[in-house]
Image (cartoon, rainbow, N blue to C red; front, side, top):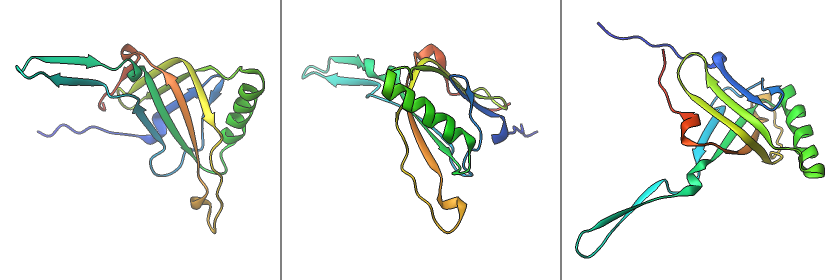
Length: 147
């Protein structure tokens, strides 16, 4: 008997500081990328192997795609402005798929810069891509399946 699992994009939650983000784009709306090289290996002439674990892999680059109409654009703009003016933009970030087991938690995340803004004939051409960097230990990042 097949095992049927369900994914519901409406159940993916993103909370940055005090803001529950809403108004996500219709295609890929969250992309999490691990910085650094992860684990690499070097092989010596006598075939001894040494592994190196890149400490930079603690940094995650999170790209959030919002519709141009999203109120979250306003809130993220204010957070970014406060960070640029007073350095007060380090905030916790949580991403959780409530229809599955994906979980990413960070005590320290920040917006790198405001997104490029574009407008076109239809609203679908005007999404805003916000890039955040987050310090995320391995224990706080689970790439899980669905229920």
